[in-house]
Structure formats: C-alpha cells, structure tokens
Image 1 (cartoon, one colour):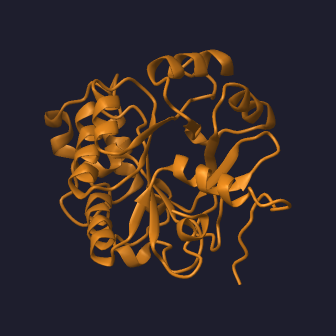
Image 2: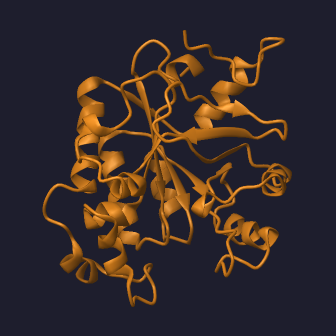
Length: 265
C-alpha cells in the first residue's frame, strides 16, 4: 500500500492492528493470532517474553513481531537499556521495530534503537489525533504513532462499539490491544488489576485461572470482535508497522520531500 492509502488520505481504507503482549499467558496470545489468521488480517505483535511457537505461528499468519522492552526501574528485562535489548533481541532476533513498555522514551533510547539497527519506533500515543502520519526522525528511525489504546479506552469509560473508535477522520489509524484484556473481556480497569493481584506470574496463568474473572457482558473482546467484523464488511485492509515504515521511505524518495510528506487538505 502507498503512504496515502495507509493514512486514509481520501477515505477510510486501512486500519493498523497492534498488540502489546505484556507477559500474557500463551493461550491468550494464541487466541489473538488465531483470530487474525482466520480472517487473513495483518498486524504487529509487541513481545515482552518468550511464547513457545509464536514466531512460526505469527509468520505463517502474515503477522510481524516487534519488541516491547521495559526500560523502567526494576525491569525483569535487564538493569541497563543495552541489557534489556540484548535479552529481547535474543528471543526475537528478527524484530525490526519497538514499542516501549509504558511508552518510556528519550533521545538516548531512540539513538540506541537506531544503533541496534531497528527501523521504526511506535512509542507515540497521539490519542484520537486526526491526520496522524509516520515521521522520519533525524536518527534514521521512523516514528509511527497510534491513535487509540484499549487501556485508555477503559480508563475513559468508552463505549464498546466500533463507532467509539477514532476511524472517522483521515490519518493513520493504528489501534492497540492487549491479549489479556481481550481474554478477560475487560469492561473497566479494575478487572485486570483484580486478576493480576497476588499472582506471581501472568505468563503461567491457565484458562482455569482466568475463567472466574472473565466479564460476560459488553467489553473489550466484544468490541474487538465487532471491529474484525467491520474490517471484513467494509473491505478494509490491514498492515504491519514495517509496511508503514517502508511506505514512508518510498514517499520520501522524491528529492526535497519533507519528513512527513502528506498534506491533508
């Protein structure tokens, strides 16, 4: 797809689906991969931990894996930014991009990502921003914003309807979900907290552990399912974030092209 198509310059035609794994148990991650694969949808998964068989399953489904490093204090990924990236790149050496856990970012971190050979960073949340587009940074990284996140939607008390998503204006429509929030069908921020409380490891949680905490009404999972149906019904295309970075690079091949080459007029 061209950059104009990805950014819905003339009409809504493309949606970007991303998923922060956040130490979710494998069965919840696999459920997301299976749902996308069944519909032939492309997406980007941001990994925090090893999930057995994920690389093969994701690639077979046309998905890509990025990294979701925790650079915060007390991180289980490592004591320094270099150690954090060492650990995650060892697990997923094919990753070409990053979204940092808690969206921690700084000029030194971005410079480190560029030195490590990453092509893009998606740690910018520009909530509900119309006309969003990727930007080529001076460091050589493409910065790719996302305009909606499920956790923020819960905190804001958003409705669980596709019409509540910011899809009605031009611009890049990158949305973000968390597999565990989807598995819980969370309808409020406290549902995740109640499940996590007192649990030594989210990764080792089982379906039996999850079952009593699943919300049975309208929640994030029903919203996600409705979105997938809407993508099919409207004939929308989906993409990976590496495709966004590649489209920006092509758009900027014209001499004198600005870092953000689209004009929404």
